[in-house]
Image 1 (cartoon, one colour):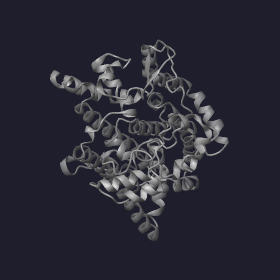
Image 2 (image 1 turned 30 degrees about the vertical axis):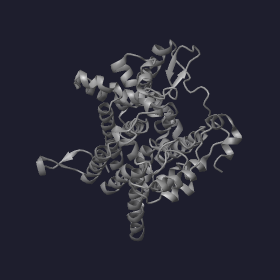
Image 3 (image 1 turned 60 degrees about the vertical axis):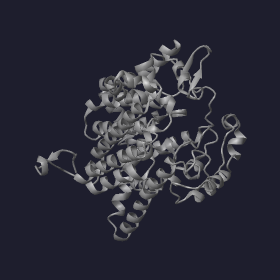
Image 4 (image 1 turned 135 degrees about the vertical axis):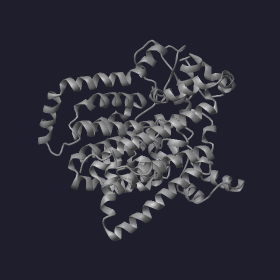
Length: 474
C-alpha cells in the first residue's frame, strides 16, 4: 500500500497533496480549537491545582530563578497542593513532573523574549499573555501528533478512513478539551509524544529503518519525564509485529543484531528523562525524590468498571465514540495480528494501573488519564471504521453514531467551560439533570444540581481507607 504522505501533482497554489481529506481533517481540528481559545477566552481561566503544578516551572526558570517556588506565594496560588515537602522540611519540591514544561518552554521563552518589560512585570509569569501562548503551543503539538499518526494510518488504511479517525478522535473525545481549554495538563502533550513513539516504532519495525531508534529512545525519555506511569507504552516497540511465540526469538535476534542502535536509543532515553532528575538534584541535592509520597495505588482493588462506565468521568460515558476503538481491538486480532498484542496488552495494563490509583475518577472533564492512549487507539479505531463504512446498512448507523458523538463531546465541552457541568462529583442524577442545558442557566437550576452532586472531599480517606474506596459512590 505504501507510505503515502508525500506531495504529488501540481494544483491550486502550486501543490496538490495526496490524500487531501486527512489533511483537511487536521485543519478542521486547528480551526475548531483556535475558535474555542479565542471566543471562549480559555486563556483567562485561573491557574490552580494541577495546572499550576505543571505550569509553574516556566516562570520559575525564565523569570524568577526560584526552583523552590517561594515566588508562588505572591500569586494567590494554592501551592501547598502541588508542592511536597522532602525529608528536609526546609526544601519543597514540585510533585508534578517537569516534562510538560520542557515541551512548552520554547514557546514560553519566545514570548518572554519578545514582551516589553512592563508587560512582564504586570502579572508576572502567570499572566494571560503567557497562558495564551502555551495553549497555542499545545494545539500545535496535538496537530503534529495527528500528522505523525496520519503517516502510519495511511500505510494501512485509505484516506477516508484516516480522515474519519482524525475527526473522531480530535473532535469526539476530551482530547479536544485538553488541547484548547485545560491545555496546561500533561495529557495533550503526552498524546503528541505517544504519536511520535508510534511513528518511530512503525519506521523501525515496518519500514526497517534502524535510524529511527534514537528518536524512539528520546521520545520514551520525554514520555517518562512528562508522566512516569506512561512508560507502559513501551510495550508498543517491544511487541509490535509479534504474532506468535515463534516471533519472540526473531525479535530477540533483531535486538542483538542492532545492539549498538539499541544502546544509542537507551542513551537518548536518558537524555529525554534528564530534565526531571536534574530538577530534583538542583532543588533537593538528590537525583531522585518520591514527590508522590503518601499517595496510594490500590493494586488489589482496581475499579475497572468505574473507570470505564461511571458517570463520574467514566471513559465511555464521556467519550462514547471510543466504543468503536474497543470493537476495533477484536477486528485487529482478525486482520492485523502484528498490531494486536501491543495494543491489547497496553490497553489492559494501562486501565489496570489507572483504575488502581486512589483518585480513580481523575478530577476533570471525562477520563482525562486516557487522553494519551488515544494515539494508540487510533489504529483499532480505524480498523472498525474501515469495516463499518464498507457495509451499506452499517454505514448509516456509523454516520449517525459518529456525528452524535462529536456533537455530544463539543456540547459537553461547552457545558464544562461554563461550569454547567461541575468540576467534580458527577453522578447519574446530576448528568441527566444538566443534559442538554446551555449557558446561561438560572440560580435555581444550579442549586438543584449542587444538591445532587457527590463531592469526595475526604481526601485522606480516599487515599488511605480501602473500605472507603469500595463503598464510596456505590
